[in-house]
Structure formats: C-alpha cells, structure tokens
Image 1 (cartoon, rainbow, N blue to C red):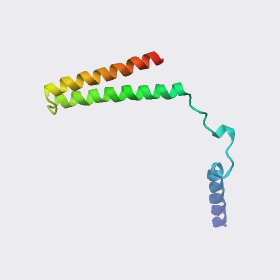
Image 2 (tube, rainbow, N blue to C red):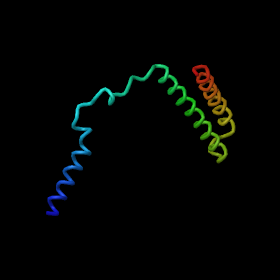
Image 3 (cartoon, rainbow, N blue to C red):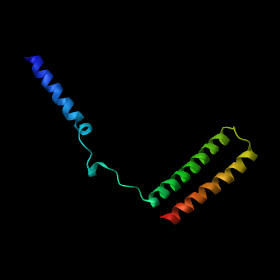
Image 4 (tube, one colour):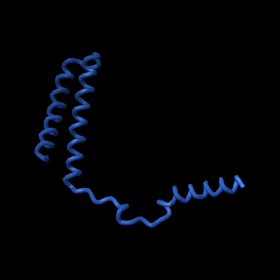
Length: 94
C-alpha cells in the first residue's frame, strides 16, 4: 500500500513539474521584441563598463609595476578618451 501511494505522489510530481513543457505555448509565454533604442542603450552601457574596467585594470597594473610609466600614460589617455566618449554618448541617448 505504501508503494502505491509513493508511486502516485511521484507520478503527480512528474506531471506538475512537466506540465509547462507538455502544453502549447500561449501568447503570454512569448517575449516581446526589444526596441532598437533599448539595444543601443545596452551597447553604450557595455562600452562604458568595458572602458572603466580597463582603466581600473590598467591602474592596478601600474601600481604593481607591471606597466612602465610611459606606457601607462599613453594607455591611460586612450582609455579615458574611450570612457569619456561612451559616457557622453550614453548621456545624449538618455
């Protein structure tokens, strides 16, 4: 008797868990298309974050003497310009 009850519980659990995979998807299950402006905003944020992360890494490398002072100055200027351009573009987009 106990095994029958256990088998029923397992079968019911399988049905409950598997139900979303067994039924036809409805309109509520579909994700709406993303607007082009939202994609551009994501791209700008990723660009900003990548530039700021590269600046942070460069600063760490310079402090641990992994980068020469001349290289640091050149890379720092380039990365700051990149980060600044990304931030300005992001501000204009918003």
